[in-house]
Length: 513
Image (tube, rainbow, N blue to C red; front, side, top):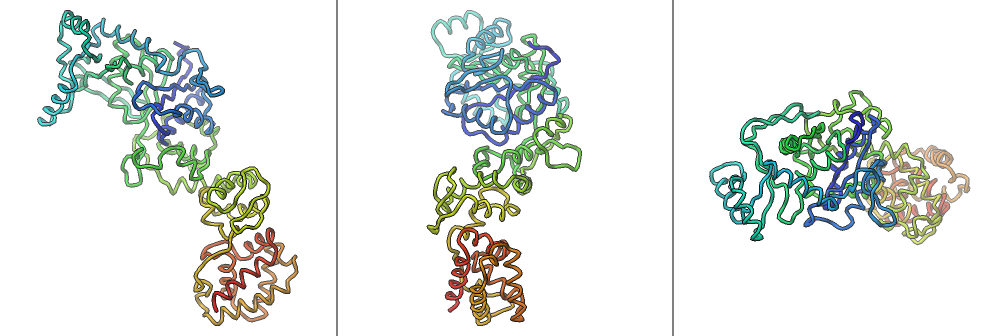
């Protein structure tokens, strides 16, 4: 064990698929608490469920923790594609600790805290069926607990398949002291004799987690609320071994907006799903920290370092935390707007490539727009700057800016301002084209100069703004909602010159013929 004064938390995921957003929150809370207390954060991989093991899942876990800035002090590492360890309490991969679990399981059997169970799957299924019919909670009936040593030896010698079960005391109560939920007590007679070692020789979570947490000096076990009912079994194992139990912290469940439990089966809940949609790591961390943790202030935007400074479990709520996507969008938008435009451009380009609005390679200086015209990285940066204030997530870019990379398509009726009509709209666009042809290149260079010239035109013709600016904006963007026509014109002019603006207006005029 380590010095009792050193706080040691761990994140112990199973490599059985993509990391769920709830797993990331668990890792975050464990990380924040350790770092707040100048302690250690450990990564342990619980890979004893070989049937559900997914190739590459360990690498993904390590990659995600690194991507979100949660550097761990000890645990499983990857070096040149090879799994390894750092820290003095390894191995940190449970599949390499089987001899340790066997040693402690044997100790429990010898001391009477566990026993061999030779019941077949068929018998257990029939037992469950009977209990369900009687509306009883499904529990093992402890049939094998009463076997004599001679019967057990004979069964083992004959090669009969077995599991090892925990011998739960049949009397008394077990109390869990949780830092979030307070004291929670169970009657021992209602606790099932949990399987500790499966028939394949691998330990179950219940044995392995207790042995590992003790041997690795874990002081605070941080996990989801769903594990709270299992905790008395863990407490009883600590008592059976004569070990001091760690502090337990069970985090409130994450709920959908309809207050149903967020589940992997619903899709789009893996961490990678959120990254692919264009949520920034800083925003995700900020949002997840507020799922169940209340800073007790009006402040809602926190850097990782600020979270470390303020985090403590006494600010974690018991109530389920609703995953409010609108709030995540709002927080993500704040981080997008605060980001340097050049860096944001680097992050946006892969989405433009994926959505087919440009072709090229991510690191290119020049690209080809969907229209076939050449566009520079500087031009894309201007497009990004124009939309930066309106983006909620990076993937939104494709829906907002297609007209900067291809000719817009729209129904001609869209060109007509609600207070105008077809003939007036045609006349206004025609006169606007004639006027724009007389503009110098400098008149198109900035939105300010372009706006001044257009408003002079409107005034000289005694027109209202809407009847000119609305068709101008639709002709340039093809959208009902977009930046102002002056901003669009300035940006288009940067890449293509004034000819592009005139051409789009001429196309609009023809569509009204």
